[in-house]
Each structure stands twice: as structure tokens, then as C-alpha cells.
Length: 601
Image (tube, rainbow, N blue to C red; front, side, top):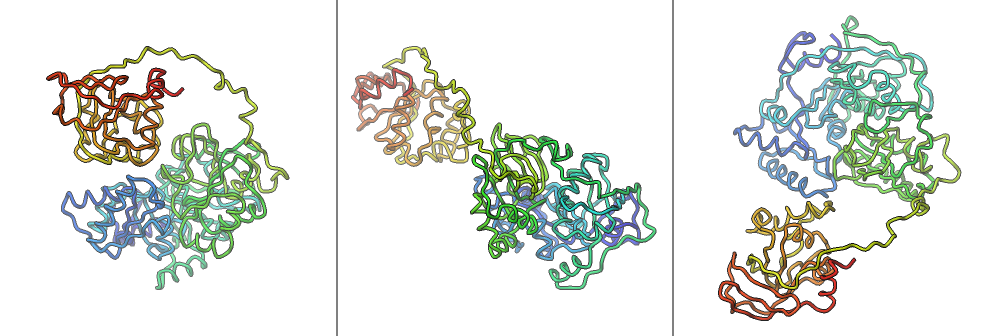
């Protein structure tokens, strides 16, 4: 049998397995992340299922280790509570990428099996282990039974000959493989690597290559562990491990021999990881940002390569460089070696360990029109943001960040390109004044009232900070009051022309304009309050959104659904059900002028 067959047979309790055979395999490490973990917990609880073996069951919080996303924070806490109840170990947001943690904590070892909600679990092929990313239901089943069913895949053997060129990194090796095999020529295969050049690869280099097996469509890219890697894993597990080795007469569906001396430094062009080309064809391509990290290139050797190039240099003007080590252990090693200082002195942003750019909302995302060069494993449209992403090695990314354009380590210019003032050289048509016609705004409005007699309603209750990335006013209204207890359905029930009446200090808190513009989007005609937060008051006045203060409305005896008439200029407020009238604070001269002008601008 070959490597994958020997590992699966050993974990299925069988003497032999063959491709196409479906077997139940015992899983040594059953893992869920903050991405997918909550659904695993939900599936277990909804089906009344317990956990088979907590000593083999883990949670890893790596997709949002900064805890900067509200939804991730909710999910992480949900999982923490379940883990405490069951006694399951959580590698929390201060740990790093889960698949790397499995190796460094001795939870995966040569010949072992692991499943996780991470699609790059096949990274464990770097140490000769079987790792698979699986969906929430599969992982829940693994938590409960300790086993999963799996179809034994066919295998491919790739033997490398020739000497590896000095400028070709591990990332270049896998980009060359993607150039040859694309995203589907080896779809569903387990691939094994052989040859002197392979034997010489370090653990970090093997991790880089194994990580991108997902982008090649393979089940795993498997390495026979070197003596050095066996010693490392033995030390991490604290016990003797038998080296997994394919039998001399192992059968393979296909075999390839590749001369590694023909490999060159490469980049993947935006949109497809397998759209790889010789880097020389992309040299001088302007970049706006650069990213070094991910499960593919966040290892110590990657950090050292970047530091070697960045040391004594500065990131080009107008370029942002973001660096994220894969694990906290690597982060601390960077600190001890002085690498963090090199990064910071070069002008880079260094974040805490984790997946980074692969997870939306994290360090490494880019915006529309932004061109990024990244050490990540994926550059699908929208994966790392709204811009374009090139994939390359850490050395290439570091060199490009200094140059201001895509280049190689041996071709860094003496003076970096400066794009920071480029846009000022272009004709700025936005400065051309224009007159905007708008219909006259009424001084008197009538509408149905909403009575929300609460004081200190802050801007997070009005428009929560989890929506702050929304810039289109048309999208804001649906979220108004969805964080105000008892009024979460306000946006679905309010009608155009309605008026909100509330208490003291309405709009306290942040300066977010969305807390004003969302009401206008819903068609709310005005807000009456005893007082307004100072910033909220200015925002509303400048947006020509009517806000009015009052001392007391008791004599009107208003209830939800009653209709009123309000004169902004005179301050006359009339209850239309009984024609009762009282005076509120009229618009000031400035407020009236801005209101009639339809806004400050």
C-alpha cells in the first residue's frame, strides 16, 4: 500500500484498503473552529448527542483572533460555554491557526488522522498525516462517534529530479505545480512527493506546499517525514512514533517525474490560484498593499525571509504592509529574535497570530480597486476583499512592498516608487461646483407617532456598530433600532411619514451618521426628544433631518398611532385627535436654513 492507504487501513482496523473502498476511520484529533464550531455545537445539542472522547476533541479560534467582529465574538462565546460544560480544550484567540497548533501541540503526528472545519486541514500532509477539512455535520459526527466514513482515494506519485534553483521558494514550488496541474487535473487524488530535493525540504516548506493541495483539488499532498521531522513530532507528542512509509511495491494510479531545476519564481494572477505565471511577466505591476501570513506562509522561516529583506528598508510610500504570524509561538519567536522591530521599523502593521486575510473582516482585507500582493493560498474574487490579489512567496511580497510594485528580491530599486500623490496629478472633476435643484421642504408636517419613552438611547441601540461598514443610506434603514430592546422590529413596522417621540439624550454615544440617515431612509419625518446627544444633534441638522426638542407633552396625552401636526418654524404641535395644541422648540435660524437647503451642502 501507499501512504494514504496505510494510514487509512491502520485507522479502519483493516489489513488492507483499496481505492474506492469506503471505510469507517478512527480520528485521532476532532476539531472545530470559530468558523463552523457553533453549528457543530448546535447539531450535537439538537440531536441530543454527547462527545465520544474529550481528550481527542478540540476547538480552535483562528479565523477571527482579534475578536473584532461582533458575530464571531458571539459564536466564540457560544462555543466557549459549550466547551466549559463538556470539559473540551479550547485553543482560544491568543493561540493561532488550528492546523499549525495540532502539529506544535503534538495533537497530530506522522501517520495520524485529524478532521476539522478548516478546508486546509490537508496541511497535515506536511508531517505525513491524514488531515481533512469537513462540514459541520461531519465534524459533529466525529465529535460524537470518534469515527467518520471515508472513500479511499486513488494516489499519484510525483518524483522530483534536478537541483532546486536558489531563488525558488517552497511557495514557488507549489505555484509551479499549480501551473502544471491546474485546479482539477489531480482532483480527488492523494499525491505523494519523492526525490532528493523533497527530502531536503524543511517542515515550514512542506507546510507551505501541503497547504495549497486544496487549491489543486487534491485530497492531500503527502510527504514521507524526514528524520528531523520525526524527531520534532516525537518531542511534541512525548512518545515514540512509527514513521509512515509507502511499501516498495505500492501501487499508484499515475506517476510523474518533474525536473525541479526548471522551476522559476512565480505569481498567481488575481482571481484564480492556479493562474500562475513567471514573475518576470508581472514585474512593475503597481501595488497598493502587501500581506505576509496565512496557514500557507506564516511560519518562522517565512518571517525570517521577510525580515531579511525588510531590515534597514522602508515600505514604499502609499503602500500598506500587513504581517500576521501563523501561531503565537512564532509571534513570540519573532519578538525574541528582533524581527518584530524590523517589521515595525520598516513601516509594517503586525497583528496577532491567526488566519488573517482569508477570513472576512480581518487583517489582510482590501478595498475596491486596491491591488494586493499576498502570501495567502487563495485569491478568489472577494475572498480577501473587494480588490485584486496576486499570490507570491514571502520574499517576493516583502521585496514588492519596498519597491511599490511587483518585483523580486534581487531587483529591488534604490528608490521606491511613490504613488502617494498620483491621484492629485489627475484632473479632479469632483471639485466642480454644481447647483442641485430640490423641491421646497414643508415647514409643517403631519404624521403618526411612535412613543418610545426611554432616556439615553445611544447610537449603538439606534444603529449597531456591526453595521458601520455600510455606506449606502438606502441599506441603513433596515437596521434602525434592531439593538433596542422591545423595538427590534421597528424597521419592518414603521411607515413613511411617521414621527418618533422619545426621552432625554437621544443619540448619545458615537458620531455615526448612519444613526441619522437610517431614519430618513425609512421615511421618518421627524424625531421629538426632550434633549439630543450633542454630536447627534449636529449630524441631524446638517443632514436636514428634522429633530425637535420639547419640555413636556403630558397635556396632549399622546399614544402610539395618534396623529400630530408639527410646525418646524413656529414650534406649534397639534394633536389631531382632539386639536389640543402646545409649543415645542422651533427650528433655529441656522437649522431652518439648512433644512430648506436640503442639507449642509
